[in-house]
Length: 108
Image (tube, rainbow, N blue to C red):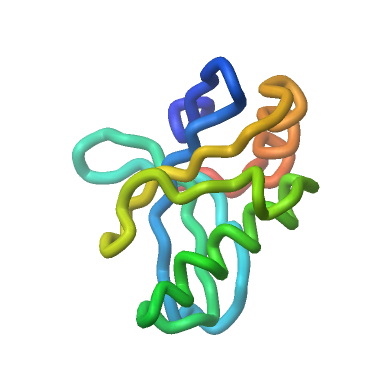
């Protein structure tokens, strides 16, 4: 399951597949893409215009991980569904929260 994120010195890099205008703000578990990469599936109500969906994604992950939005950064994928979020903080605590959020929701 840990392939959907990678530990690094200052926290985690989290790989996400975002569905904007998804009807609700939620983290829907881990999915394996056709190329074998694992991503966390997330959806937000916001439309993908004026960076609103990206900001909603940052807010969603900050709330889910129990950290400030200033500690979550969109590193890649500003105009793509596939994104990389950088989250600063204690790796062990962040991994534990992600594992709990995604438990039982893995899809291939």
